[in-house]
Length: 298
Image (tube, rainbow, N blue to C red; front, top):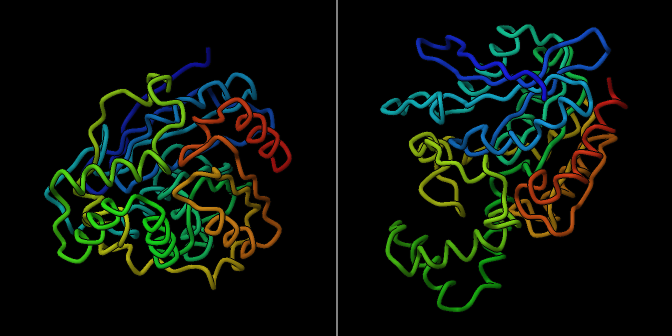
């Protein structure tokens, strides 16, 4: 089992927790940095990729972004915007000496990669490749696909969600039941209770960072990321990109194909029997493709 190292990076007067699996070696294999979803989720589910450190003799770096998990912070709404989260990634690379790396991002982490590759191009030196896992290039497209899928739900659930969107009241048993059904269809682990321990472990979610970053509901963003629109700029990404998504994913096949069509030379793998966390739902197969991709681009 690869060595596990934990620590904290000073950041903007606070602390960012990181977890490193394995050690950097002079073997030509760049470390893999893991960007988790949310905003406001944690690194926890990425622990299913610990095996990659042994199987590929490669260092894996994961961290809890400011505002959640072991980097929990609340009462600072001024922090919950993309510039802070991108600065944190840039500072982490410097702090840990990650001059060369691959980057995997899931959901919001995939959005971060697109921002990084377009708006922070000068900071991406040494990035060997992206693995965009169930991310998206446009809040408008994400909302449109979510609203389309609501129409495929039972009528009473459609009514509950639409009423919440109209009134701004995202509470009550009818809405909660409808939301649970939606997440069971497109987000929650395919494996259910058989999911690994790290996926079921209690975590300190950054609810404030999600509220101010995305908004009070999954469907229609109202936070600082509501104007996140990169479809027309995907062609500016010069980093080799592997897109992976599930056939029953919040990142619908249309969303994934939009990224694939826009990022020059990208590769797209659409996983059956997978929702929003393909690397959990299709772990073994996913790791085969992940390792192959990184070795091709080292």
